[in-house]
Length: 317
Image 1 (cartoon, rainbow, N blue to C red):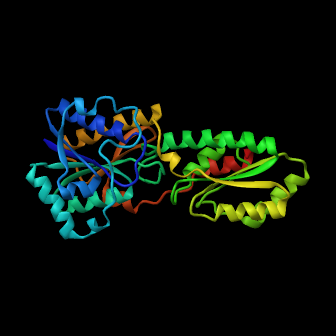
Image 2: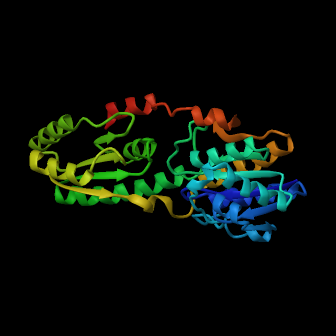
């Protein structure tokens, strides 16, 4: 087969490990593999290069993506997608593996509807793809967030301070939930649980009066202005309070072993599915087993709140 591979949307640690797995698994099947630079934009512009094993050497432990990534809102227009299809036909590429999040999946679905064999692989730090238990990049972002929160705890404890820490995740609260639990945050707020500001202020004031030296509050992005919240906490509770937005630092860095292993499994699985004639789907893991889901179904799925972990927060935070 002649297979193209691209990364699209936000970069995530482990994308290079997926690229490596796809290229080497395909070459093991005597396929030809083409790296497509700068996502769907690069596909439209014809930025395609045939890859060898050497081209993906020494990238397993590198963050980001060697293929680059770019957003192309115009890809929603059929005439723009037709330019992409024309490029694939120009190189006789019969299948396309697309690495990214739900926006990447939507592009892959549209190309599939235009006759291109496509497979989606979840590469995003947000863990917001409901068709898989975990996405490539989440483990590394979680590790980065935990390291930062642990360091902020040291300062909070020393200065008897409340720290409000905003982590990424877009509309999925997994990064906040997992990092908050791993770091012993006193309060964790996600889009799934919501934010009861009045209760938070009351609880922090009571904690301060009871002599607790510090507090850690972990909150998902897009929920509130954390700097304004920090001011309100300081004015009401008596704690000196600081807000920290971890931001894009969570996207970088060498992927964890968990992300590298998941990337290898999913990349190889995607190539296997193409050879089995299964396309128009995205791959993932469920209870550590490899699975695939039609892309149109995956895009309709909604991330459900993690009841077990949310209950655990209530008991031990």
